[in-house]
Length: 316
Figure 1 (cartoon, helix red, strand yellow):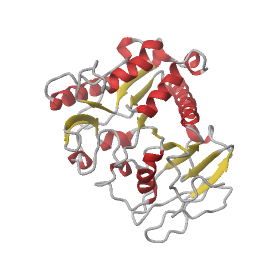
Figure 2: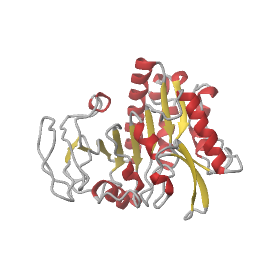
Figure 3: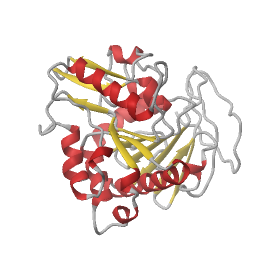
Figure 4: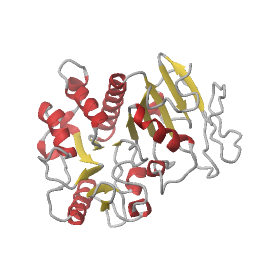
């Protein structure tokens, strides 16, 4: 359950009972925002008004470092995501000359990508396309022209409509016969792109993630051995419930990112979102709970339907 607290300044901690989540929820301009730590500038400057609090979840005492923003509709969610993407890209290019992002697949990101590429919206013209390097958080083990390919979706909706240099698109070579070899090669790609030594992990400027109705994120599914992976950047795993192989970034890579944005929409995602954010910490059953590192700045962009089971999440 959420404990509603009224504060107007950051606090270092809140009183926490065992098994209880203490969060702040408030509504502003049709948005419900639940905030848990005094946020970094990248979020603070783009959310309004500011009421912040540090939240600890369950018995772990681990700060979740998450901001949750609720949009009324999927279209509003895509617009908010496009605004965040543009701000982060501009800030990163100004600071370091490039912006690295790992994309996700699915219907919600598809609409968001269409916002970025739409000539009638402001994002396409303002985006520093030639400075953005695109990678993927996960991929299905299918050729790039397959209808299920995450790369194909991004190409159709985004890359074919914007001036991004081909050399800035770093896709997973999922057409390789062995998924494990595709994962190995992608790990090599990331090591070269980020100029990593053997024991280093890449630090993406942004990783986009979704949430499955079973609590999975990227291609890290309940019960998967990927949940326990500590050393690899990319792995392949057989997903029994889907009877197929997936290639995915590992939890250490996801938690190393400078920023993580979850995009969650639809009533069918409400139970999973409720369990991940309000339930007990059970990453073996709810892998999305793994994305909680203090080193990551995690933003959950969710629509009204997906937030419908959050305690107080759509009231106001």
